[in-house]
Length: 363
Ligand SMILES: Nc1ncnc2c1ncn2[C@@H]1O[C@H](COP(=O)(O)OP(=O)(O)O)[C@@H](O)[C@H]1O
Ligand SMILES: N[C@@H](CCC(=O)OP(=O)(O)O)C(=O)O
Image (cartoon, rainbow, N blue to C red; front, top):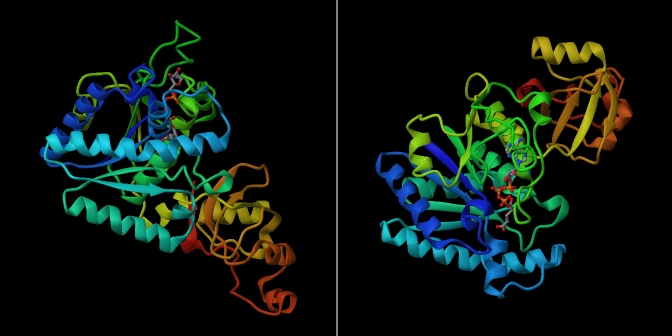
């Protein structure tokens, strides 16, 4: 199995205010054991900001972006140093791979990252991924490592995504606020009811809480990768989950694994939205057809040809995602028109389809 493991700050700190070395030793020992059993592991690790905060001797908490970037820049190297020295005890070499949103938006960068990660795995190196916090802000950022881990699971076509955190799994409500909440062992589909369960980050150091874990589960399971959200303090959590033990919450994958190109379309961050009329929505949803300009009601966002857009039905629900063949401004001009009018309206044509069915993933 190829497994992506995501470790949140909450797990790496084990409830303290610094990186918890014994916890890191346990986690790496577990990863080494899983690798020895023949599996491949890709690690997505948070902890840079915390490591930076520790290195600068706990300066007063300042939540500005500039401060977080500074702490991440200080901490990332220290985090990697810790990982490298502990992994060394188990004879494992590590590689640092810092990614950000553009690495998923741009097909060339995406393929480059995939080649590097594939190379690491074939050489037996443990890749350790984090967001490139020091340089990425706003639109350029994925924003949280749960979502990043789902994008990475798509990128490497993982068989399983394991997200370890400081909660025992997904509860019927935030267990810190509602002590009567109970664990949900299996989620078949991420429905609006599941979304409603999620509260914010549990500690002042975590990003996103259960919300971003559900988002990650949605992204990965749609592309065919099951996701387990489990407690990072359970002994040998990773090894137990990999052999199929029911620990935490398991989100089941939807149907079969998607081919790599379609995974990329899903992994990409959508740059805009196109609302379809009923006929076009039906053609896309039921017949797997292409989207023609004639069926477009509205275009939102500033996107370029080749970027990912969300396709919404007339009721506003997302029905598919795909790569647009036209820039947003051009789509606005040809929306509602027959394809044979495209050249007359724009002075050029990239073909009859706004989004070709080969570039579409139905949700
Ligand atoms: N329905 C829920 N079930 C479980 N945990 C929840 C839920 N809603 C919110 N949480 C909170 O999410 C926290 C985990 O997220 P976060 O603090 O961002 O950790 P990490 O650093 O691992 O990403 C838990 O400590 C918990 O308090
Ligand atoms: N990239 C940041 C972590 C961002 C993040 O999502 O944190 P967490 O919710 O603890 O997984 C860091 O290394 O500190």
